[in-house]
Amino acid sequence: MNGLPCSPGVDFKKVSLMQALDLAVTIEEEARDRYLELADALSIAHTPEASEFFRKMARMEEKHRVALLTKRRASFGDRPSTVGRLQIFDVEAPDYDTVRAFMTVRQALDVALQSERKAHAFFKAALAETSDPEARFLFAELVAEESDHEAYVQAEIARQATDPWGDPPGDPAAYSDEPVPQ
Amino acid sequence: MDTATTTATATPKDYSSPLKPIWCPGCGDYGVLQALYRALAAIGRPPHEIAFISGIGCSSRIPGYTTAYGFNSVHGRALPIAQGVKLANPDLQVIVAGGDGDGFSIGGGHVAHAVRRNLDLTYLVMDNQVYGLTKGQLSPTSPKGLATVTSPLGSLEEPINPLLYTLAYGAGFVAQGTPADLPGLTALIEQAIRYPGFAFVNIQSPCVTFGQEEQQMRAHKAHMRPLASLGHDPSDQLRALDLARSYGKELHTGVLYRNPNPPPTYDALVRERQRALAPEAKDRARLLDVFLQK
Ligand SMILES: Cc1ncc(C[n+]2csc(CCOP(=O)(O)OP(=O)(O)O)c2C)c(N)n1
Ligand code: SF4
Ligand SMILES: [Mg+2]
Image: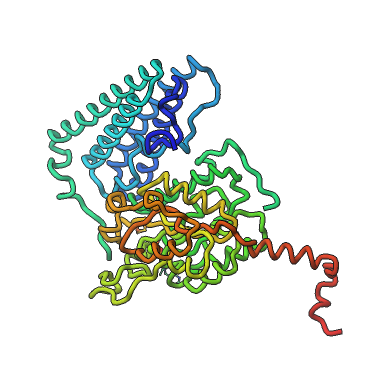
């Protein structure tokens, strides 16, 4: 099987600009859908603040997806996508295991931070494997953009730390409530 | 399958219903469901040609979360109901889903017969070593010594070994996966569905609310041992039995056994017999004559 472990079947050595764009669009789509899924699970589990934060992340991923799709359409029109959802596994989407009932916004921010770092590492690894110059340019752009997202989440974490109504600093596990067997 | 159709453009979303799962956030079953959607999309049969049958438990809620036909039936009775569904409509792709309690406790007696009857069914057990839905009681796969609400001083029994159990009864396809490896789990489910006969996948699906620390996703990621990396040959039944013995100690993932020469399925044999008997078959209107003394 070609490709990085979370994108089986994508051969980066041969990837073209169109494939690279399709890949990036699909990655953003998966992340958007996952954030929405996690937000739904959290709102059902009476965790509205973390749920709302994940919805915000979903909107951010959607914005990024639309921007990439616009670029793709401008150069390649409506030709069918060369990358399917079956080829993308948790590239930027947070793992299902990262959320818990009653998690705090601070913990949700940590989840988002890990996901942005995951995406950054993925595009960096893709860049290292890719030889097509246009695709390389796109991957380099994406590496920079994921760094920006990471910086945004980090700034939010810093802002939270100074917010008197925000979650207390330190290890979230120390003050979060965990469901227990009854 | 006489009327199987496939759509080349199926996507995981085609199999996802608008009903939102009510599992605890973080539950392993979310990943299993995602792997299932993807496996179904890879196979491409439209939802109306698929039926999900389950028992009762958190994991047994799966039928409601798909766009396929579904029956969230009675605790421990998913397998007999699924066999009935398959025999009544052999063209349906029948997938059975449930928990370790549903499958190996109250429903344990049905597994052996489903295996030996060998209908073309896929049986997915979300093995979290606990009764999740009823809040954390001991299950048949709970490790010995586990303290729960029903074993406050620690269980005294050895767990059932689902892999050894199904292999020993002669299942033609036995695999184990975890949502900690989503691409791997997706591939296993796809292979199980494609296997022509009774196929069993034991999915170690962590219960984040009542499960033990060693059974969580982080532990799976750290300790799972893909069988492919051990050079295991899935057609080697004796080696599969040997590997299955380490259930509960090692987390082997992949196909343990796949019969390289699958025998005809029960549903196929029934059809064959029906065809053979067809010429002498009584007219539908005279069916009762079989039972009436003349
Ligand atoms: C006949 C009957 N007995 C007992 C129950 C109570 N009950 C519901 S689910 C369940 C066990 C669930 O455990 P498992 O099958 O492992 O599923 P999980 O919730 O862990 O996914 C039990 C004992 C029931 N619903 N019906
Ligand atoms: S109780 Fe356990 S098995 Fe049930 S939904 Fe919650 S985490 Fe999942
Ligand atoms: Mg269980």
